[in-house]
Image 1: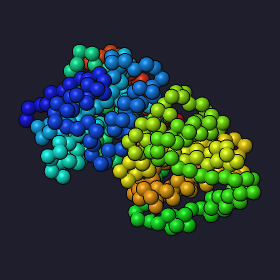
Image 2: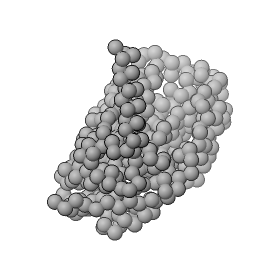
Image 3: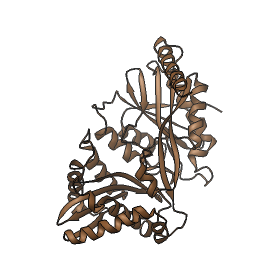
Image 4: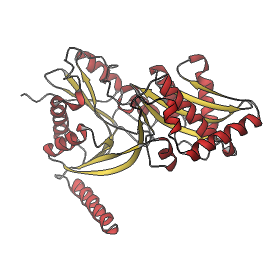
Length: 373
């Protein structure tokens, strides 16, 4: 089989042009593609979610395709000789992007699990290492360690000649709905949480008129919902956003895609709790949540979560609810299952810098192992 060619693109517009030239639709993606592994998400992240200006020289979109009309793109960022996946603390998952041809059969359309995808990843990694300006260290994260691409990426990097290791990123709590009704889900929540919500609701009612609204894609009220979210977040216990434009721009992007569920709970006309969820292909992602300090006694955050859960159960009919990044204790009250996100790091052994980076990495790993034994 002839190894497919690899294009190195520097903008998402170039990527769209290249996909159309292959007869593929840039907007199309397998239904298994996560929100964080789509062009709209990555494009918004590159434009508004990086702590430094992203230039054409920084963005490396490696694109290839198989002879069965599958296109695979590995979106990367170049920081000198250290390259990373196009992801950061705003990203709860990363994966290569796959576009199957519309005329492929259903079996081939499952691009992330196909042999074609692994073949394309090997071509991408071989091209990366053969380039004149190549990374001495490549870091890809956060990845689903149970997905076939996690092992396929390691195999492709090793086949290209890199030294490869994996590392733990964070725990991820989620709830598989499996046809359960919202009433049954609510009844199974910890009794302390349910009683806290009951008390909070009674206190809210005594404190004055309160209401709860969930913003989806209605353009007339979108900006007010975003402003309410920002106001609550800025008066919450959370650290200020390092890049304040990212969340508003992401909410606008998500609304345009039909993914947005932005809930706001107000008391006496003042928003006191807000949550931003992203819904795509049967999965509800609980992305950002906050409540104003001083309103803890009303359990406003929990009441809003309850309302959002009811919405995604009964209206969106999701198959899974995902609390995304971290092992925070409150997430375990609402979710039932835990999985892990991992990363892959690869080193260039033909470079002194790559050898030094590899040495530091494995020495640090051995030190951590020694400390825990």
